[in-house]
Length: 431
Image (tube, rainbow, N blue to C red; front, side):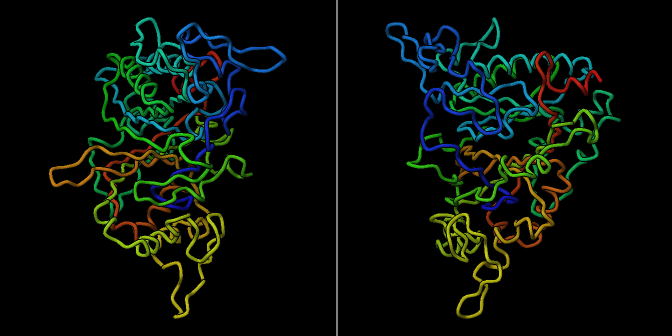
């Protein structure tokens, strides 16, 4: 779970504390000139121009100006959809829909048009529409992102089979899978992320209401991450096993990042240009079994120190792992079945994916066992060259597999971002 082709893992946190007004744009996403505007009429917060600086206007009496956390805004329109390279948010919802009986291409197009406009408004900190519930009326955008994707079954239901990407072929079966079909796949998939729980739920409720008679919820999952500013200094996050998780995640400033993560212009099919493929897996962590292990045994399973994420071969978190290093007795320092060894790109033909998951905890069962783990989401230009080869190798001998269980799965084609005046998926549905 610690290296960049791993099963459950997290990208690095974006900052140690909340940014000040006028802070640089978040990596990979444009920031509107209205990034400091909150919900209309909520606080009187505006862009100031005195001395050329950005600042707060005087708030109405009794009102508290938005903090920089609430004021962060991600743009809806762009080359790529938001929620892929956007830094991880602290709250997330995943929801899949199936088109209703009788609904087809026309109804799907109208739905994506509604969803796109709702997402644009909410991400700007505006009400969803005239019937807005008011759940988030006191908050700013709070880094809200809404991302849309299409499942394999969507194309048959809309008569668009010829436009279905080969890369969307169903994932193969894995021996470690214990999949619940009712919580897997779906015609349409929506990912919602925000740094405020009410803002995230508000978006989820608006998306569900917009579905109307065109689509019904197939499954829905809730997740969380560490809140921005919760640590004294920037650091890679930890998962529910307590492991530093996400050390080797690809980063947008790497020269081959786009090639690994996004479908190129001129790729197949053409409507997927600048899009990506999301593999979604609900991975239960068997925490009671895991926590019975000593720290040393846990480190041997992962191949990294629990305290700081450094490889067992030495150095710090970012030090290259020495796979050949042995101890005084001639044993490999990084065990042969260690998760970090098995998932390294150079052990998998260079396979890479961008993991952007959420942790989950859905209660405690009658035996006192926590239903907790990771909503694993990974992004890649082609899952047959990203997720699949790595998961096949993990399936054959990963030490971590004894402590996790894959309980739900989905694969979705996530088209490129919508230009101004367009909706997500328009090139597919109207092409």
